[in-house]
Image 1 (cartoon, rainbow, N blue to C red):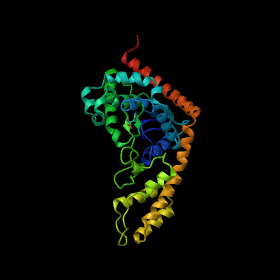
Image 2 (tube, helix red, strand yellow):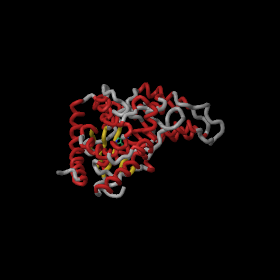
Image 3 (cartoon, rainbow, N blue to C red):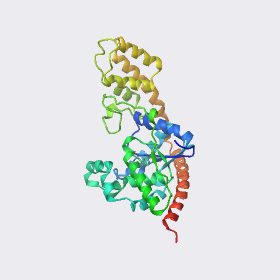
Image 4 (cartoon, protein in one colour):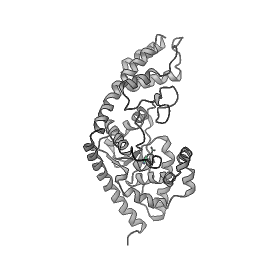
Length: 333
Ligand code: TRP
């Protein structure tokens, strides 16, 4: 990152439970960023409406996501942790940006095509302009760094295009937002079925959620794919075994990892025992986060307070930007 005063912004959709992949891939890094930069972390409840028009569960989901973020270490005193719909300036900027976004480019967006395929009966305009709203979220704070996964890179490229068009047409108001890449810090969290990474949409039993009960964690870990063990010393580990070691490296002690590395190399390893150990270490890691999230989630007064505090910080930054925007656009009569 280029300078200390850089502004970091990211959003998370309130449409699923946080899992271990989110924790090691994103949350843990957000926690580091909040100590170094001005950070805005937002729950994207408006974005959720593009795919989840039924709002019955929305409040619960927003509360849960906020609670899980705080339990993972996001500090509402350091970062602005807020809810998208609480910052009305977002909708205003979104409207202006819509005039700079072309139908052709929106229709070509990978996530749009995917979601249109998933919900053919509800290909709404909000779905089409999803990247425009995301751009508004980011540039509302004139943020330059956006810590997101690979799946969001196209949206960021579009954000840069919208920014360039705005600046070109109305004058330099916005810096170009870039994906913040954690590089070395980006830990891969393999799924328990030996294929790919842990993720919301894939096999639920192969993903460990921060809300999983102790027994469910044990059950999922014990189901992880193994085999009869290596038959010759110092063999190469098959992918699914390497994955179990990788998960151990995230939550187990050095001694434990070392023990199983040796046991693998001299062919004395018993995967049943190894998984039991991993399950207990996972429980020890996840249970406190789950407990903390649960107690925050059920404390509505506290949640209201932090949402209000976050929204105040976000609105202050948004108001300053919108003043510049209206000036630049000549919307002052
Ligand atoms: N589109 C993002 C996702 O699906 C969520 C999001 C909304 C976001 N607004 C944002 C991410 C702004 C980064 C910046 O994960």
